[in-house]
Image (cartoon, rainbow, N blue to C red; front, side):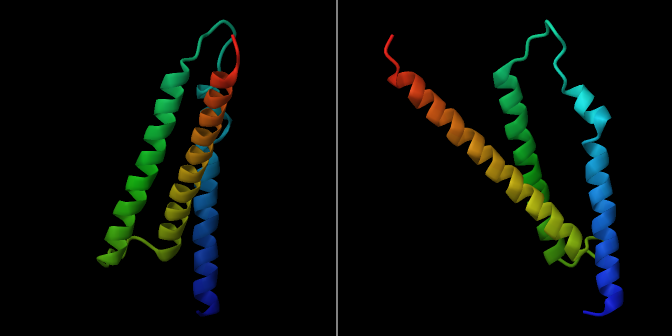
Length: 112
């Protein structure tokens, strides 16, 4: 790989990093803040998280298919970042599921 290609990949990665950070900036975090006295529905939060993980996975699959078919608008770096996002979000969801399951089992072992 030539030095120019490496620099292009690094530049693309920096742009994608900036885009990811801007999506999770203070404004986006403010949308998810819970105000005092406001109730949050745990099942809705969990369902939204599962839907987001599913959407990441579907997006990565579509992008991989398009890349395999020769779509020149998708770079290898872009594909790898998207696939890694999908993988990390799936692993995080799996850990949440494991924690919920262990909490449920612990509650079931408690004597009333």
